[in-house]
Image (tube, rainbow, N blue to C red; front, side, top):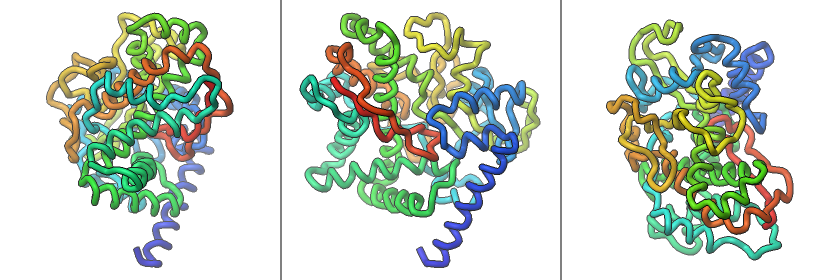
Length: 389
């Protein structure tokens, strides 16, 4: 990258971030959400929902969907596409092909349980759940499939963490330094693993976040840790509710394939339509007490995922898609990958982690503040999660 290119990219990134802040402070909650400065996005989701009975037109140019029924239609793929090569602002052009609909095939559940269990420290130990466990097991699986060991495996694991930022960088301008680091990581991952290298980065990050959110939900819900220790099937139900309250991917971007009226909005061909998955999962017309973490929910639809067009749901974990959806939807994205998608990959890792931790969670507590990565409105990445078992 030439110096002049770097200067121009830096200016564009800074300008785009400035516009998002300006739009946000002047009443555009989606723009404020894209700034990625909040640990929890719930207030922006509710403001977007309150701003319009149907899709909300943001000053960023995107239509934002917060209702469950409309979100399901968009993710089913009929009339909407996540095709590569879409139009994008120049600062985002390196990233549109980094998708989250498909993910690497997860290892068998029993194998993952043993891998998480093997990394648990002794009781009375403080450790970082995100760094030492949640990120470690998915990355080890990817590096093992690539045949990497020793320093090569450690370097690849670091590249996976850095490359995952690309998922957020598609929608939210990062700093110039972070953008350059992410581009370099993607290039290195593609050299090692082809197109699936970038795919694996997103999946590993989503899995790590889901593991952390599932454990945090157990720690924050009275009595749940004690139930998990004795109820064999509770891990799957905890993860199903985690996928609803803290989805692996919070924002799914699509393009309208034709002009149409959609839930009261007049869409033009090529319009960007963003599903606010976290908001759709709190649709009060669909979910009772939607802000409550409740593993005993019955009769409510499952969490939405980008792979809704696939047959079935995650194996060894909760169902990952609405089974009544169209079967002709997006089939894994331009990069290929396992058809179960990132949601299945993340769900199986979270179920495995909960099963491995079931015996120690009743005595586990947070040992410091949970730290979220800034400018991460899509993955809501957790950087630090200190606990003591």
